[in-house]
Length: 209
Image (cartoon, rainbow, N blue to C red; front, side, top):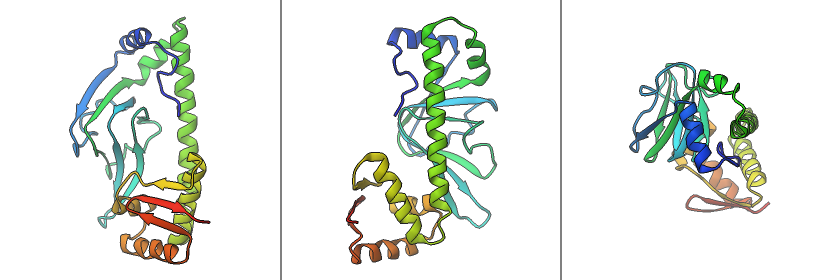
């Protein structure tokens, strides 16, 4: 995974953040974020912590739209955070950097090699986010819970190069991520286990097929 500051020295990173007039914010576990982010055109960088972007519909159903781990980015132009039904919640103590888009555009005119590297890193991360979103679409468009589960397992296994999958969230959150009923998902996981497709130990799932 590309880090936004890959191939940029600590000294140049500090200079870069000053150029971008970046703001550093700290949030406690379970704290909401959206109300704190000012402006409509911003980019955020998760330095430490873990964030979930969640959508709540009128019936009270929750769907996890996106997960943001350390060194990942989000933004008002490419993340689902602009709707009134969306919220961003810190699942761990979190440290963010917030940058306004217009500062990035202005900085493009600079001749610093570290800035060119920063833009290259940013574009690669955006490309990776598009691929992740396409993978999510593949999962959600499957018609049955079983096929959603198997598609998720296939994508994560291929991405990590391993048949061992460690869920980064609780099973309730996993159901929210797949946009399915928690009890129905649990039954299908049990069926897959009984049929010899998977082994389950806590949040570790091993593929046997």
